[in-house]
Length: 534
Image (cartoon, rainbow, N blue to C red; front, side, top):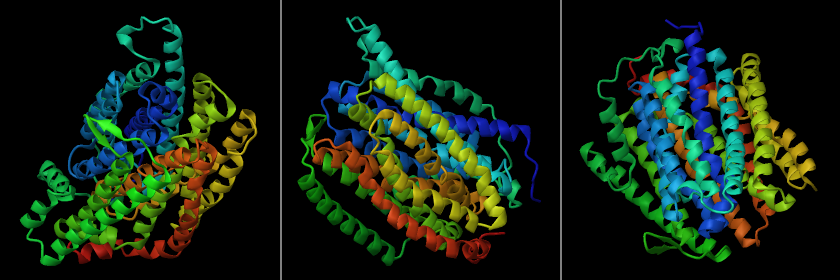
């Protein structure tokens, strides 16, 4: 039986999950506004900041989202979110004690591990509280919460660091903290309160809203650890042996490793020539930052391949529903490519404003942060209900067209925005830019998570997360930082360079509009053909 009524508990759950997403982005993005202070204290460049903001975080965020996504498909999602937010808040606070690149990197990877549960557990939980016709609104609220987190990261980071450094300009700061270290510590505190509230939230019946209730998973933790082992390079061979994988799987796996290693080695050579960087010293070992960047990227690509190969052996219905749907694969590719643009731009925009227009960190944090917050809330809250309306008028295709409008127009407005002559002009143009740019998440996410069965939403969210994180967050900030270093610090040219990614995005969305209705109609058929008992 399919449930339709939205309860008060559902709205409370939406509020808590939205706050979880807001704090996730707060702890993740606060690094951007604090970057100038960190660079000065630790004597590192923009490329290294790109590594901290993107690559180091992305690797562990993406990798651990997979077992946490699988756990979300079988265990209590409220518990998962509660434990995860407590863990990443602790890791975020660790940055307050950093005196070098290595400790900051450890803090970032800890934040990445904890935040890996936010999307799969949160999405799965909310889709069991809200019916299909309200999920555009749900995704709009989540996207707005993300904008709130982004905005608050600039406000809190800029104001807290400035206040602390001004108050203790003559020395004598408690604990010897600098302003940026105090800001990290302050940002970590709210998560512990939210963790307690999430622990007490009621878990809904899985699949009830879709009329496809899922039986209880007898061993979710075992399945989660098995998935982690099957996707991690090296231990995945033990998984292949345990499952009796045929020779073609071994050959394919080894072949992918060889190709990826060769490709990453070539890219390391290319980027080192384009933007030479001094070595990073981590634990007394000197490392080429380009080698670290593309080594992580190669690791991520192999993880993605291992994931799909493991699903083909251990969970054929999920493999057939996900990989067998061109629309789902295209939707994930669009989201990943757009994340290259979003994170590349947002990771360096505060620094761009301060450098180009001569504003202080506190002023930049408050004005840019509050503007990002307000417009970031407005855009998705318009796009969420609009996405549901478009889907009603033009089922599925309407959501694709809304995404196409936002992602096709936003790069043009972005170029205009970043060529503003002064701060007033920049912020005025940024309003229009942000409204358009934030309209893509509700329709695209509603579409992606509607193309799989309820029991598959956690692993689907995790798969999308690792693809978008590795190729989006892992490349975007690093690319902008590298171009900036190579052009003598020209952040305008560096930020705008990522907009070329919009061309393949538009092409993919046009193809998606032609395919999506067919693939939704085939979803149950693909699952049954692979042995799903529905």
